[in-house]
Amino acid sequence: MKRILIKETTQPNNTPVRVCGWVNTRRDHGGIVFIDLRDISGIIQIVMSANLAKDLRPEWVICVEGIAKERPQGMVNPDVATGNIEIKAEKLVVLSKAKTLPFEISAVKGEVNEEIRMKYRYLDLRREKMKNNLVLRNKIMIFIRDFLEKEGFIEIETPIMTKSTPEGARDFVVPSRNQPGKFYALPQSPQQYKQLLMVAGFEKYFQIVRCFRDEDPRGDRQPEFTQLDLEMSFVEQEEILDLIEKLYIAIIKSEAPGKKISQLPFPRLTYREVIEKYGTDKPDLRKNKDDANELAFAFIVDFPMFEWKKEEKRWDAVHHPFTRPQTDDIKRIKKNPGEILAHQYDFVLNGYEIGGGSLRSYKPEVLEAIFEVMGHEKKEIRRNFGHMLEAFEYGVPPHGGIAPGIDRFVMILANEPSIREVIAFPKTGDNRDLMMQAPSEISAEQLTELHIQIAKKKKKIKNGKKS
Ligand code: ASP
Image (tube, rainbow, N blue to C red; front, side):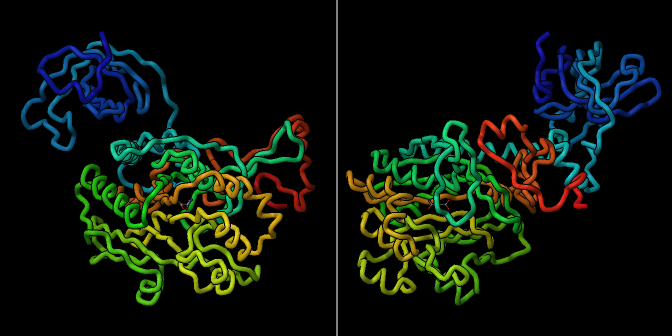
């Protein structure tokens, strides 16, 4: 008999069925055993003789053949989709057994220690709440792809092994075996590639993409995170904001209809205004901050182009150097960097920055002036960004884009306190993968092949503890 999903057992009455999954719970009532069986689609009650159930225990993987019957009135469980059905088991096959788990899957109450959850993530993901979070995430991603495809966007993949992009964080680097002493960098974002795709003429690009930033642990961050990266040619700032607004309203309507958007259209507030009024560039504009279902979106616009880095004694780009200043008067840019505003915008939601973007400098001389203000030597500019400057000499359309993060947005929609709850395999605050035990050492042969020597450790590390 062909296996069916648990959600498909609901009708008609008295049908022979075969279902497979995990034993969620076992309850013994005299000679009868009630098994709650769980698969990806739901949970169903199975009635077995004690003889058939024998030593069946939670989390064993089984297949059951039997008859799906409507439960007698008064025995219906309205909290479960298949709560009006039970299966009278006739045949049981145990596919695999399970040891006693480090924590209970079906336990609703009681917080499980997060390190244990991360070490046994494949068990943690069996929990209903975690499954629902990943299903929601998937629905949002599919919705975005579908929406943007209808808007004429093309999803294009860009390299993971590349050259560093200056987005303000440290790069993760990958040593090259064939080019001794050289390294790739994992992209902090596909910024340069998406701009080069505009030079290539694609006009509307997007990608749901992983970005990598080696930042010190701070707040609820991950060294790799997912963003909706997007770029458009021949656009004004307002067209990009409009598109994002339309997309996010549509996502909420379709995937989180219980949520209420506080203000439409999303307010556009200047950086200066919000700093003066709220003391932050990511204000929480909810009318009632206790309301878990309120969503206060806003765009913050007119950011300063540069900020003064005290320790480094130099100007740095507030967003990134590819951002277009609101003037292309090069003399002014170089003379008064602190006064120049940028065509830059942040996308905020309930006090979180959930995205940022800008129109880009497409005139090579403006881009060069920005790098100079940031303290780069002419030669160094050519060495690091020569490919961008050169590309812009072959016919570049005016362009701009934005990159809203996926993790934090799903976190807010799922009412979760941390992005780790909406990422299948997240890392700890200090960037470790407790399940895979990464990062890890590599063999002496691998090191030799990669032309790498490990500097002597200052302190010996034994069993994870400094001695
Ligand atoms: N690359 C930028 C970021 O990741 C977004 C953008 O300017 O489009 O923050």
